[in-house]
Amino acid sequence: MEGEVLLEQEKTKESNYLKIYTLGDFRVEYQGNCLANVRKNSNKLWELFKYLLTNRNKRLPPEKIVDTLWPEQDYADPKTAVHSLVYRLRKLLDINGSINGKNDNNAVNNSHINLDYSQEGYLFRLNQHSWLDVDEFITLSIKATKLCYSNPETAKQLYREALSLYKGAYLPEYYHKYWPMPARYYYRRIYMKTLTEYLAMLRDESNFSEVSKVCEQALLIEPFLEEEQLHLYFMESLVQEGKLGEALSYYEYINTMYKQEFESSLPTKLQNFYKEIKNGNGSEYIKGEAQNNYFDLKGLKVKKGVQIKNTNESQGGFYCNKDFFIKLYKLEKLRSERTEKPPVLVDLTVVEIENDNDLSSIEKYSAKIEEVLVTNLRKGDAICRWSDKRFLVLLSNTKAENAYNFIKRIQTEFNCECYEYNVSLVGIPLTKLPE
Image 1 (cartoon, rainbow, N blue to C red):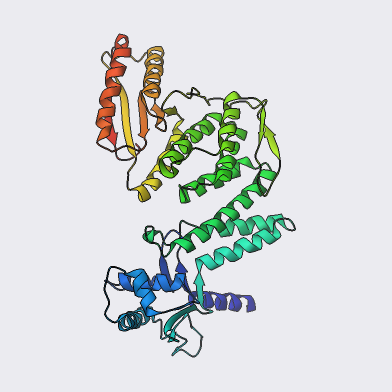
Image 2: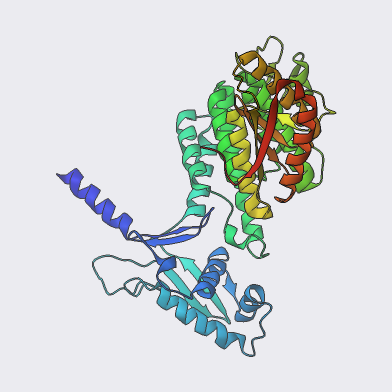
């Protein structure tokens, strides 16, 4: 009975927290309600709130606030303008009179936020009944690091909890604004440190399937990570699972990404590791702060059904299996949110002029279309055999209108090469993956 009472008290205490989420998606919640949606035309107030939150515990002059947030606007009296906005923000955030500890409910102390003006500046502070995701994220990360040697199982659990809070960049809706950048880069560094420490622990246990899953999730959250160690961990886990074809395909993908996004070549260690995979012999080690061991590529065998195609570096597109193609497409979709260049997807289907379901013929012209595609695509374009007679192509760094030119070129090449099979090639652009 006593335990039930304590549990109920804990739930009541939890429900009275003001919860603020900033990683990947901005939300302010109180007792299950999202405060960010309670009033229309409040974008300016929430932008002020996010700026004060980012600079919490710092005293900010009104002039600095308006110059930073709205430099294009000319305020004759910045102090009055900010004072008016702060007044409206207080009203917007007022939860049962809980701003600055003014609470009409004497039973529970619901103080959430302090927002004071003194010494010619505004000071924003979170009180004891406020919860902020980035603060919790950092706390869990620090605890995990301290326990990684003395209590590894607890450390791994804390790492997982910390990583689960990082759902994306800090305040991504302001990606192109300057003022959130220092905080965004700081939290991203903490994320990468937490991630690589956790991956190192999994790798030391030879838990490569979990390494692969964690890396995939990280890449979906932060598709632009210029982090050599993460890519090495991912490629190594694929190799250790016997997925050599996927490891090679992933290398081609990040090689293109580095050139397009960072205008640079891949780090030397990644290039050397790629050569080791292609050669299928020799050994290469992955050095890092958290580990100093190695694995040998000698004797690694490709699992049944896994093929390594396009190992000639002079060729253009790269071939990958269906599962990995889907992963690449998801990464491209996420990249497009920042680059505003949606991925260009093309469906190519072989149609028989004469109804011939002879499997040997199907395999012959399927092999020919693979050859035509690989040799006619650019580096970074991905190819997948979706079904017996259907192929999908993911075109990188191109415009949607160019898809028709690509289809026409491939059709011409294919028809010349495969005229003897009495087949033709039908191509259409797609806006999403087939069901």
